[in-house]
Length: 208
Image 1 (cartoon, rainbow, N blue to C red):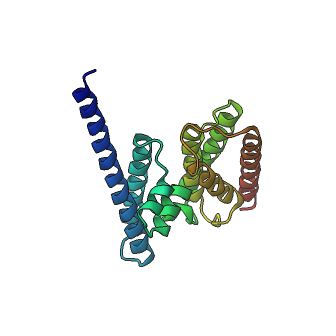
Image 2 (cartoon, rainbow, N blue to C red):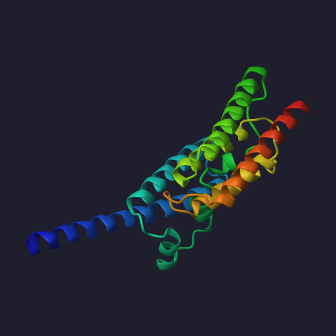
Image 3 (tube, rainbow, N blue to C red):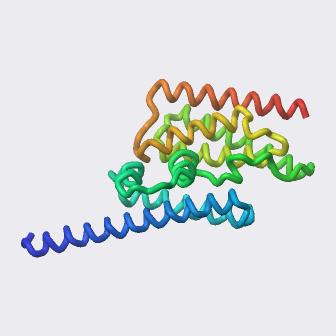
């Protein structure tokens, strides 16, 4: 390859990286502002949820595009003050309306659908772990779906054991790379937590 072509390719790669970092900066800044707007009640829960989900999706896509860059290091290097964005993007990965929801529609039909969906997400998550699907990009979406489903069950408190465990595992997974896999001890623990949460969920239904 001619030297000029090599330099041109390297320059293009550098430009793309800088553009991706600029997008990352923009997403972090926007999420921080969005979280503060939600806390101050200057945005409706619906608008907040839709915007937050979109930004989280963009963030996860961008993470794959700039592999090798530590977002936490990026925040430190640029001296960003963004505790709310760090929590939302790096630790939880779902909007606050999902993280702290006490449940949705309690009418009979809606409740039956929500329960069926939650049971399905529990079973899918447990089956995936048993089948060895323990890479971050395999298990994380399943736990996200499970947490969202649990928030649709009326009157389940925010500290319900299955919600707590799902949030804790999402925090662990968000600190790992997409290609990383859970080790043997983590696999045993997450399966135990899922089975415990599933049993507690069934117990909560029988007590209604």
